[in-house]
Image (cartoon, rainbow, N blue to C red; front, side, top):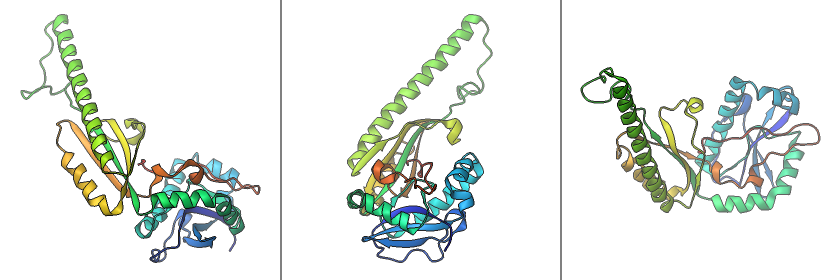
Length: 276
C-alpha cells in the first residue's frame, strides 16, 4: 500500500486479537507490523498530510490536532485492553515499513527493557482541585455580605476573605500530600506533573495535585476504591480519577521519542492525558 507509516505503539505479540476493524488517525485501519519478536502498530496515512512540512503546519490547527489525537488514543486504548503497549509520540511517522523496522532494531533493547518494566501494569491519573467558593457573592449561610459601611470595614472584609482562601489552600496542599503518599504506597511507581492551568484545561477550581500512578492491573480495583474513599473527605476539595491508561508517564524518554527520517517524515507533539 502507498502512504507513510504512522506508528502508534510498540508491543509484544498479542495474546488476544485486536478489536476488529479498528481505525485510528485519519480514519485509517490499524495494522500489525511484526519484526524481531516485537510488533509496531501502524496505519497508512497520506503523505500530503503527514510528511514533515504539512504535518508541522497541521499542528497549528487545533481542530485537526484534536481529531488526530482522538484517533491516536483510540488505537492505544484498544491495545491497552489486550496487552501492555509502549505508546509512541503523537505524530510519529516513517516513510515505509523498512523505516519502522530500522527504528525497532535501533531501539530494541530499550523497548524490551521498558516493556518488561510495564508488563501487566496500567496508569491511573489523580488530580486534586480546590473548588471555587463563591465567597465574594455568598460568604455565609445568610446570603450576600452587606456592603461595607466604611473603608475600614471594606479592608476587614478583604482580610477575612484572603485569610479564608489561604486556609483552604493550605488545607488542600496538606490533603494532596497525604493522598499522594497513600497512593504511592499502593503503586509500583508515581510521577508528579505540573499543576494544570485551569484556563487551558477548563476544569473548575485550582489544581493542587496532578499525579500519575503505575499500578498492576490485578490491584487496580483496590487502588480505585482507595481513591473513591477520599472523595468528599475534605469540604471544598475535589478528587478526580482518570484511567486506566497506557503507561505514558512511565515510558523512558528514549523509548517514546519519534524518529525523523532522511526522506522527510518525522514526529511531532506528544501523546498522552494527563498524564495522566
